[in-house]
Every structure is written in structure tokens, then in C-alpha cells.
Length: 266
Image (cartoon, rainbow, N blue to C red):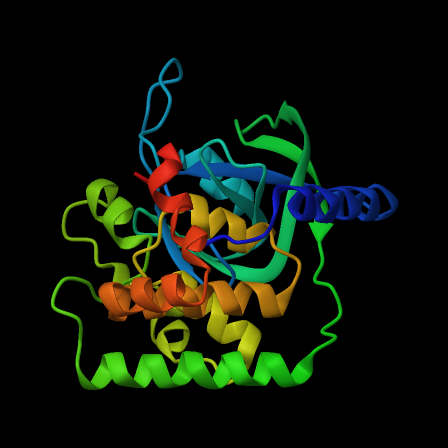
């Protein structure tokens, strides 16, 4: 599903890093989670009691950290990732810290010291999108994504559904009886966005994609590329055999090789 050449990827990455070096950095608390968090994703972080010599369970934070980030912002990164999303902390209480992914994506520059409450700080640079040079192509991919989404709603796939990528990880660590739908932005974030950029993030956080592919979308600075790759994934999920035959016919079968050759996608 990733069909940029290695040279193109490295050149684009170099341009991003050069741009970041000239951009002002920001310092925020950083929290690592088992799943990649994307803009617009609602997340409920369990507030878990732990002894001073113990680390809180994966995907949770201590009460001291919850108090430190309350009403502020925090950067959420998946394990091992160098890019993530800045989240607004909405409410803290009842054993949960409710946050939501903002539109601001960031790259990790360097880890810093911990605060007195135990929150890990880090320095970040903003990840910014390139200007859209082909608006007509973006509109075409936007229409394709909506058509595929409507087709899935009419006839859901038997083996997958549009579920938030955070649910599996959340349900393993949430306190007994806690409901992810208690998030104050749950209903608002469930609405399908009208714009192409918002729709891309909405789909990418709900399609059953490998974490490596979500990382690629998070780091990609081209809105058209992000949406095109998301549409490719939707077509492949909707009808794997037909999509594979189509790609072989047009000589693009190599697009399907990455998920099978990349161990992160297993």
C-alpha cells in the first residue's frame, strides 16, 4: 500500500527535517501508548494507582501526572514512534483522563527531564502539510473515499468494521465498568467529517490498518498522498481479490508487497 520509492521518501523526509529545524520547538509532556493516535481521535487514559518504584500499566497514567496535565496539552506517541499528535486534555476525574487528538502533529526532537509529578517532558517540532498542488485529484480521491464508505455502510464487510483503533487497547486497561463512550467528545468525533483532510484521519483511525501504515499516514506531509493511500486500503479491504487483479493488470502489483514483507505489519 506504500508505493513511494525509497529515494522519494528519503528526500521528503529530509525536506521535513530541514523545515522543522527552522520552526520553533515546543515542550510538552509525552505519553506512550500501544496504538498510533491520529488527529480527531478521542482517547480515555486510565488513571492508575502505582507504587513509587513501579511504572503504571501500559496506556495509563498516575494520579500525579493526571493532575499535572489537567486542562493542558499532552503529546501522545505510540511505542517506538518518532512522530505523534498533540492532544487537548478535556477532563480528568472518575479514574479517567479524557483527551482528544488535535490537528497538530509533531516530531520528537529530544527527550527531557521529568517533572516533579513524574511526567516525562520532550521537545517537539511541528509537522506541517505541503500545499495542495492538485486540488482536482484531491477532490477525486475524496469522492472515492466517500463512495467506498457509503458502500461499506450499506453492505458491511463480514470480517471487519469501522472501529476506533484505541478501543482494543483501552478495553484491556480501563477500570471495571468504565465506558469509552463516556468521553465528552465521543459523539462529536463519531461524525464523518466533510473535508478531505478530516475524512482521511477519521478513516485511518477506524480502518483495520497496521500500526506501520498509520505511522506512515501520520508522518506524510502530502494530503493527497495520505488520502490516496487510505482509499487504496479501503479498496483492498472491500474486495482483496479484485484489487489485487486490478493492480497486477496495471503493473502496480508491487504496491501490495510492503504489508507482507514488513515485519511490523504482521
